[in-house]
Length: 240
Image (cartoon, rainbow, N blue to C red; front, side):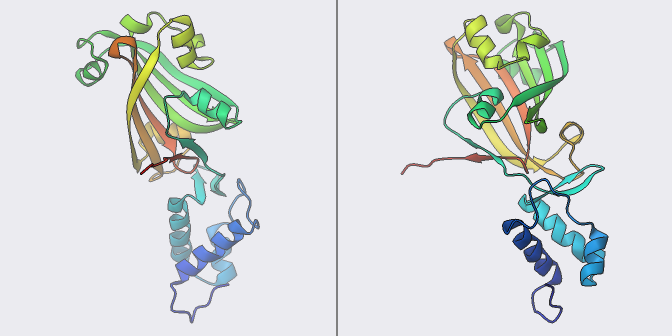
């Protein structure tokens, strides 16, 4: 209910009304939110006010915009606990979800100075560059760009990524994955992120850059992963 005599801003009242509908189950995850026009007519308020409320709820992660489709109630986020090195496939299996990948490109390229430094190889060394979309229960969750030194992983094909690539590295290549370093930040989706994750302009993502090592402290993969902020979150346990 919107009270125009209330000291609370109208957009905030609308936010609270939509939030209550979500919490009470009147609006279900995956359901299409009523249009801006529907809210303007129902409450006799401006479209700008409606848009502000929806934008705030989208930034909060309760709503998600799908390019060309509309605004939907966000599904429950996949939660990953930071406690060790796992692949996307392993993460999804632990959550009871079906993992899948859609490979965009797999190509042999020469390492630029930045990637060469990350992988501890000479500039212009042969490396593999892989772009793929990661899906959970057929929903695009993440867009990855991976770089792997050819001198460590050898010849690889798309079928090597049909299951967990970490399994392939450890079981087929007989290389022990020992540890990794990663940084996490919240940022806005870039053009490719928006295209492959079906995001609108200005959508937030969880950006993770990870460098993973095998025996002998050798880096074997540097990967940039853009996660949909409305679908994914990290949990940390902080002992004192």
